[in-house]
Image 1 (spheres, rainbow, N blue to C red):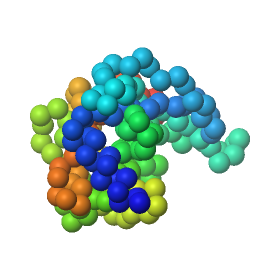
Image 2: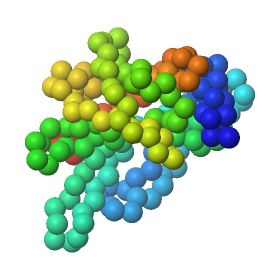
Image 3: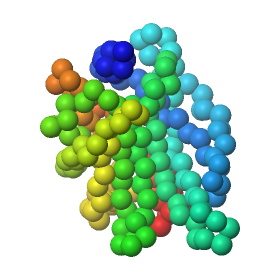
Length: 186
């Protein structure tokens, strides 16, 4: 059933390219509250709207006396089903003070190929899929200075991967408010 759902999601993405970034957050809170989604921006072939939202900053602490740890994330979700296709979480590693990205991808991937990140038409960054569990597959990478610069000034991050049929799926993630969100977590 899960593989059929992922295949359906991949087919939907390939035919329409329609996803939206869902945003839910309340800054400086361990229990984020949902915010309303923005107005529809683009109709899909099936008539369901596709929506885009920006990067969300979340800060949590293990106790009242502990320092806040902040991260930013963006979530691409299928409009019709609410299924997460890509979730990107970026945090500053406390031990190195460098940004690290964690990506959650759907199940049903061609694992040996991994995933790729590309800002606008720049060079691609290859990611190895590290593990999979019932919510999806995961990849993690430190963000090099050149990639961080591209993310801060770019318009769109493209996350791509292959499904089991070896079809490439590319998910666009807007970067319009990336720099402002990153400044809040660094």
